[in-house]
Image (cartoon, rainbow, N blue to C red; front, side):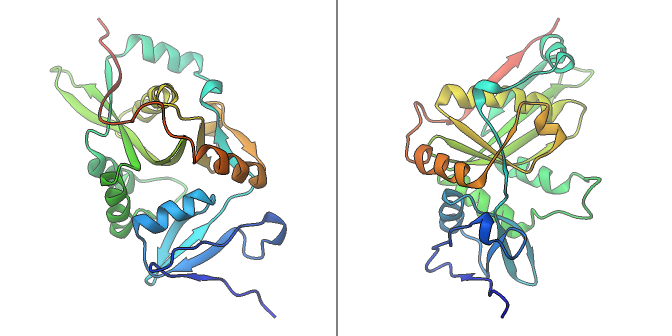
Length: 244
C-alpha cells in the first residue's frame, strides 16, 4: 500500500517530523492548499520549507543532508576579497524587501524553466517580513554618473538565532556575492549562529557551506530557534565601501 502524503491545514499548521530513514517521497513531507506566515514559521522550525506550488497546492520538502553555513566559517575567495576592497558598493538591510523578492522571481536561471517564487510566495514572505521574521539584504552599485542602483540581493527567514536563506539575484556581476559576503558577518553580529542554505551548490560551497545530516540539523534548530538575537536585525546599512 502506498504511503499517503499528509495534508496540512492553515487552521492547524502542525507539520510532520521528517525522517530520512523513512523517506518514501524524495524529501516531500506534505502538501497544503494555503501558504501563510504561521505555516512558514511552523515548517521552518522543523526544517521543512515550501519548494513550489502547482494546481493550487503547495509542496513542502526537507533536504538530507542539509547544506548549512556556520557564520564563523565564512570563506571569502581571493577574487571576491579584491572586489570588496576595490569596488564601490553599499549593502543595506530591509530597505526594499518586496523589490528583492520580486527580483529573485524575475531573474532567469539556467537550471530552471521558471520560478517557484509565485505571487502567492511573494505575498506570504512579504507578510512574514512585516512580522519581523523575513529579511532582505540589498547590494547597491553606482552607475557611470555615480547614481546608486539596486544591483543584487537576497532574502531569508529568521527564527531565533537561525537564518534560513531563500533566494538571491544579481543584475550586475558580483552583486549577489557582495550582498552575501556582507550579510553573513552582519547576521553574526546580530547573534545568528546557523545559516540554512538548503541546497548543496558549488556557489555556496565556495563560501564555506558544509553538509549536515538532517537529524543533526534538526537538533541545531531545536537549540538555536529558541535563542533570541543579541540585537534586532532591523533596517539600516550592513556594509559599504567608497572606492577611490
